[in-house]
Length: 157
Image (cartoon, rainbow, N blue to C red):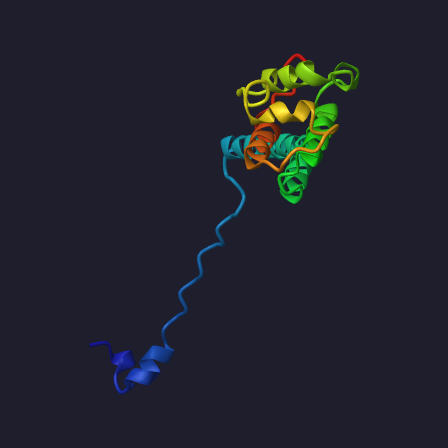
């Protein structure tokens, strides 16, 4: 054994130990330019997606408003006819929609979404509902809800 450490107890020996040096801190920045480029591309993609989502959300606000109104209409054909007309006036060119009535209005509704509930289905009452009393119809409410959700504003009026 080493003479210099003779007679020292364990605690004194431990006190003679030197501290282990701490390693240098790990850098949190990317070390290569590839990671920086990837980060910038991901950030740009997130910004583009967020912008697209915001525009789409704002562009479909009229649909959400129409769906809320349809829920409050309680299957009343007169209110449903009014809601569909206002929704169409927002989604399609006003001059082409405002003049539609009767069969032309029903044909437009069928053309603008993937269904046929208006010319030959329960939506047929929309042509006369505003002018005479019509009984409430759950089928009409369903057809109107379906039209609001699925109509294509790019369709030709």
